[in-house]
Length: 56
Length: 131
Image 1: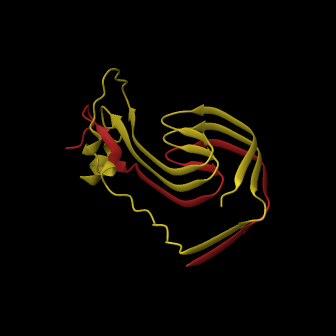
Image 2: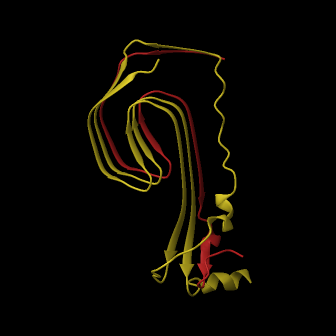
Image 3: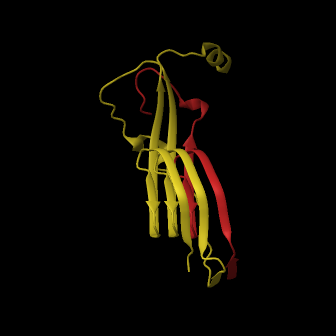
């Protein structure tokens, strides 16, 4: 694969972010490679009754 | 090869739970976050020992697309600066990252398991329908 990039002027006035969470990234700059992965488990079965929280 | 990042002003309210604010260039970044989010009916203070490997989500692989191998990459920076006037962030948390500068490689992963813990079943009518 051949990949050619020409970067001209980049000027951002203001960035306003409430929150950056759970292995997220805010990047001001150049990057070659980003790998982001996320697993999020909130099924109905997440309802646990009783005192033991560890699955059998 | 990389451009220079110029930020006039950075305002960050809080940085928590293994988060990073990095200024300057970086070769490689690897972040990992595993969270057990428990909402309980009753508060239990004291020790809370739960092995994470009991839950599947912490051992299952997360499939991430692999970056294609670039044989020929040519970058021409007509303007060698990335300029940002102001960055205002309320919170950075859970292995997250505010990076001002260039990075070669970045790998971040997060796993969250939510548990709602009640002492008694709050939805008894649903269980009756199922049975």
